Amino acid sequence: MATPLPPLPGTKGRRPTIRKWPQSLFRSYSRCFFPRVSAGMKPILLQGHERSITQIKYNREGDLLFTVAKDPIVNVWYSVNGERLGTYMGHTGAVWCVDADWDTKHVLTGSADNSCRLWDCETGKQLALLKTNSAVRTCGFDFGGNIIMFSTDKQMGYQCFVSFFDLRDPSQIDNNEPYMKIPCNDSKITSAVWGPLGECIIAGHEGGELNQYSAKSGEVLVNVKEHSRQINDIQLSRDMTMFVTASKDNTAKLFDSTTLEHQKTFRTERPVNSAALSPNYDHVVLGGGQEAMDVTTTSTRIGKFEARFFHLAFEEEFGRVKGHFGPINSVAFHPDGKSYSSGGEDGYVRIHYFDPQYFEFEFEA
Image (cartoon, rainbow, N blue to C red; front, side, top):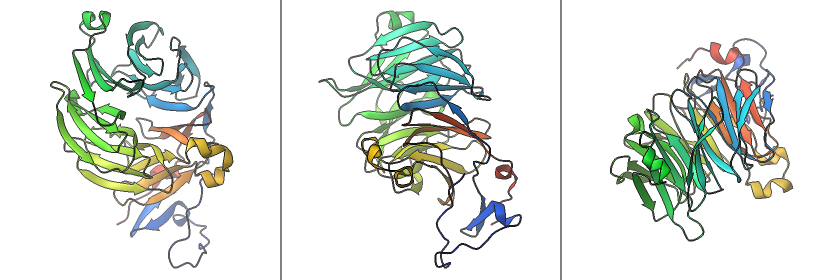
């Protein structure tokens, strides 16, 4: 069930008894009405990993859900019923990132085994192995699916790099020679996504900085620092005009994709590991919780392991959904906006379908 919010101001610790429509489905904030987020419909539980989930990702149509974890397994599931379609076997270390191209023909994964691998989505065959000097932290296809980028960690004496490969040039893959390699001298990249039309990438750093790198020249186009600690996740809106960041500084923030101008801030009491934007509504879901190293000493109530929903414009929290027995490491909205998924430190992925009341509310200013 969804966790109730704290008492409203002026109620002296008491909440009024609410029994009738529409009050039973809405809670008033900022002179507006927001829907309650309910977990009345039983979530679909995906059990395919032995270690903590690191990232979950829907394909563009939303019929497939890709999951990776701190084990070497890459899983793909049918999102409608949670049936496992298959696995991509080949990595020998934790897999940090996964992405599927526009038409879901290819899958890209990056791992702590110092490799980035390209797979045939349908057959599971490994198409390319790109070896690196350190762990691959982020990876992604550009808008057309022809160019891939990935970033490597700053470790073992090697600095952080962002590498770009054009899949239309087999020699780049065969020789393991990217057409462009951007060094990141200050702090390593912890999250990165392609910007609008594949003209740039947007990278979040360990120190809280955001950089926009040109995909043609490699130069830094825009640099901002709105977070005080590491940026754990970056996810774009459906139309790619905005993106949301999740940070260890207990906040998630909304930015303009082109200018990196800061728009909104969503505040919590614990580190935010992941955040996602609804494709249909002005809603954002945040996942996080207590630091993993402290989880064994904390109950689920204190750890704050709920998925938390905020209104995009008013920055107000309007609902929470429990379920995981540890911090939530990755969240994602289904492309149709009718469900969302979360992957946690407990190794489980949960697919939550929203109740009908979530879609029936009327916005009143």
